[in-house]
Image 1 (cartoon, rainbow, N blue to C red):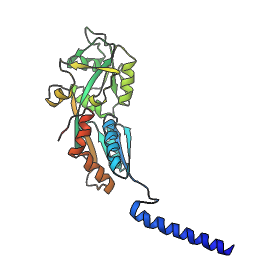
Image 2 (image 1 turned 90 degrees about the horizontal axis):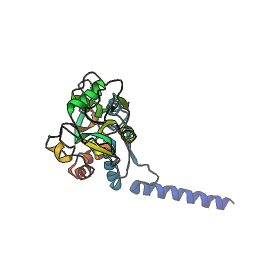
Image 3 (image 1 turned 45 degrees about the vertical axis):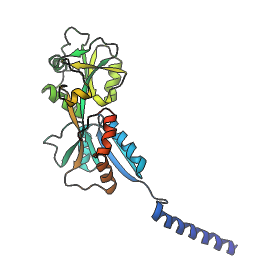
Image 4 (image 1 turned 180 degrees about the vertical axis):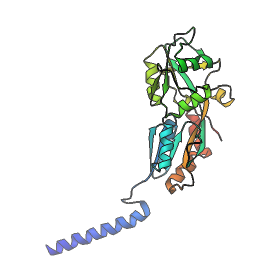
Length: 267
């Protein structure tokens, strides 16, 4: 029995040594490097695509936490992520962080697929959100927007010059997906989402006769457009793993993924 015990002990030592040696070379028993990105629900879909592409060739695990632009910026300020996502420019009051543009995006005005409306004006849309006034000569009597922490809302309000908040009749929702679902279930409402998040289950309408398309966003004829911004801690240092992913998403290589997903390259 003593001899068997010695053999088992020796085998265990050998296994430990082998794993230790292989671990140094191949990562035996080691965990993947972890990267956390958080923020805008509008930026989340393209960030998830970029993360999936990067993970194919890198031994990392990237977690993309969807919330809002405000939450992503706050997370970065507090050191709760590696970097944040915002679907608007940073405000002067948001200190301790810096923003770099990842790509450009349009804000699409959407209605139910069965709605007969194909075009609206900035003046009428502004009046609907500000005072609840139905859009003349259409079936649109209700508006759906985003909550106050949304970067899409901030950009939408700034572009339409909505300065005093929404009418009490306007429903405000937390995420892009919520807006799409609400529009699918209503034939008399209009809402807004990221152009890159458009689905065939809803219909985008033109604004003052200009369609929300990549071409019209690029040539600046479509009025509702904004940047997608990556938020970094000012004077902070990324881990080697996070720096590698950041360098990738900002590279020309990543622009193929970005443009393929319907967003507008800035490279």
